[in-house]
Length: 364
Image (cartoon, rainbow, N blue to C red; front, side):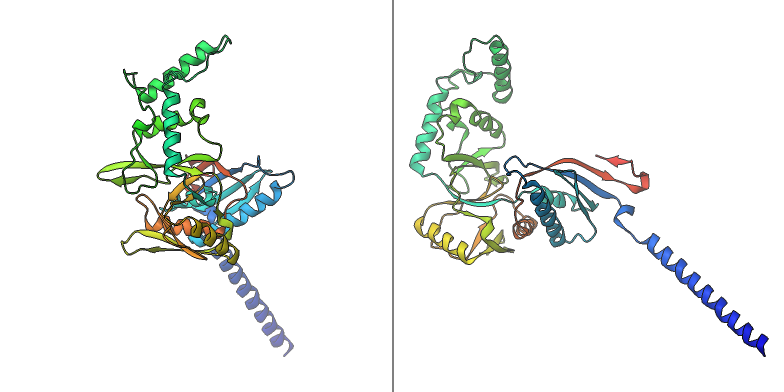
């Protein structure tokens, strides 16, 4: 009797051990076969935060805020598996599963997303400034752009800058100084709010705008800004160039929601909603500037510059310029809702890690 009971106890114990062993092996196999991030081909990025504009002691808080914003952007983008962590005192490491939309993911991560609303300079003041730019360029050697100096290295410096100019503009031609700046601008295009520059002329305009003779005649409260993307008009590809007032009339900190959609012409746009305080500010700005263009800028580039037709309060529309897609509108909504970075970031390293080739095998 005792032997029979002991046999049953041993049999039960054996079955329990066998069952636990099978369960353990099953869990271990399931865990090791799960498609975690480390077992996938993934995009590895290192971002560096520019803390030059931050006050002492603010970098740690800025890093934490940027980490949170990146995670929120990736969540909105639909990335469930990701690695976002700090590296040192001013860097952030991000790893995402490789996909066909990796370019969009990279743009979402590296974008500061600083949204600002600014008025354009008046047509009269713009014409005056452009005239001054043309005039000052007729008084200097466009192909050198250096001041005379007694320093011994000035001759070498002049030669180098002269060569840079020739590389940009081509060989100097007689009569090239007449309207040297405005000859590269076209005032006719999809909108009259700014000027249009062909993709071939853009390097020339950029070269001229960075010269000290030119920056010296641009008022301190004005600035030139390029469009976010190019636009095709009558078979020609253009960049938009705008003369803006530096004063920020409204910033993105007042934005509480943004939704992408198509307008009646099947062009993508963004419907945004402001806080109560933001609505008061926007109503004041738009009410005081009816029939004037208002530039909507993102990270210093003009997304669009629509004409204000009426007073706008706590909601409005952002028209996306150029050949924007609904994906552009969606991505813009994501970054705006997540908020802007408290400091600029720069992607200093980007590579693809392929685990099938080993951890050290990468594709730049």
